Image 1 (cartoon, rainbow, N blue to C red):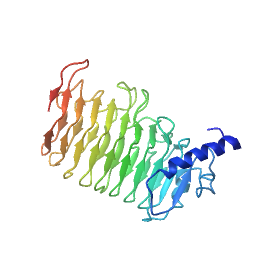
Image 2: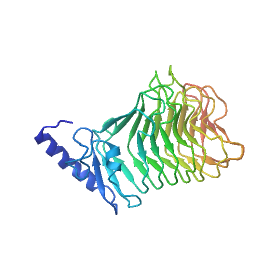
Image 3: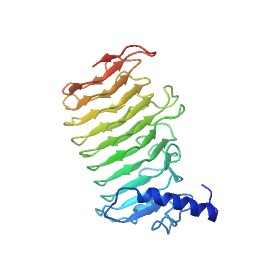
Image 4: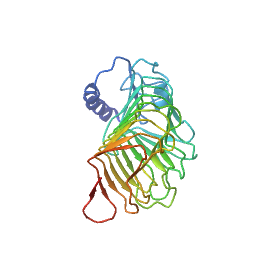
Length: 294
């Protein structure tokens, strides 16, 4: 974004209408932009914080505060919990569309991550880009009622890849992933993603209206018993793996209205105790061929 005074004013005037159109919150609103922000900012549109961490220091836990992140914002995360959301009830909203959205790129250390350890956190419209091979997990979620809405993960770029996208390593009841995109090429020289979402602890997860495509072992992985959960209206193009979703033998998910393409596989879902509510289609080969209703 241009930073001369004239363009700056026009840009912020335009953004004000966008921000005013967001649903109201009962708490305070803070702002982040790496282009125009400073360590002392965050309180106003015209004086934003420079990093998300700086803005997180301003919010009050359980106050329904909102952080608005401008589309020009870019951060590089180089270590474990490089961004750590440890205050409950925070909503983070990214502005913009396409690649004109807030972007968080992970480099330097495989432990680099963007973590959520507080409950009732909502994250909207952010882009997460893996920039180092074998990144352990892009997001570690260890709290209940965390939501990712309309976010995007670049899990691989043809050279490097993340081992996992979202990992729930402690109780994460009612995790919601809605309208999200996990993407990468079908061929990647680096690490093959073992799971865009690996949900291991917490009941009633919902994954819906999302797209998973690229080189991965499976898109959704669950190796510990997790009760209930809904997986619906998702599309899977699994570049190298043989299954789209894998669940522990005693897990009890319900899945329906999904679309699966597995050029290397024959079984779109493995879930011994799960429930198939129907309406899903599966194709096992490249090319435009008839799909099988499952």
